[in-house]
Length: 132
Image 1: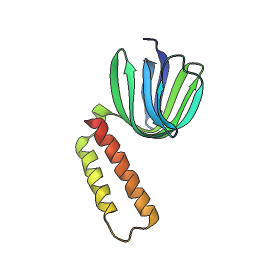
Image 2: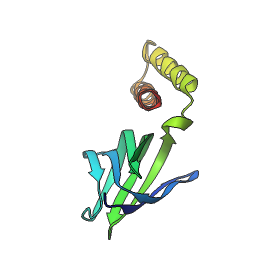
Image 3: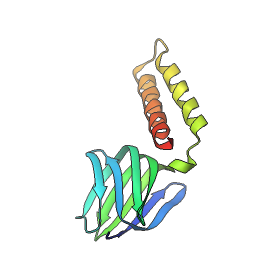
């Protein structure tokens, strides 16, 4: 399978820099798969499961926001958060999910508190799904 240069960068540093066969991630426009010779493209990244195919092996990750660009055959994903499946602390993700669910069941939440609790729950669910 053909490859393309891929960089995955986060505020904490470089999560991946090398040749990839495929990048799959969720953008704000929907799920997207980047392959070699993809046309130039730019989009904001959504929240969801991502995976990268390298040397015939797929690595899964939780991706939370950012920007994806493909220019001149090179792909660069600037992720707000990128966590490889093997790096996700399952107990921490489960505890985060429980806290978010508890917050959502509280009475008298204002709109902002409700939105924040829903976002925390969504992040926890993505991490939990990827970690399995």
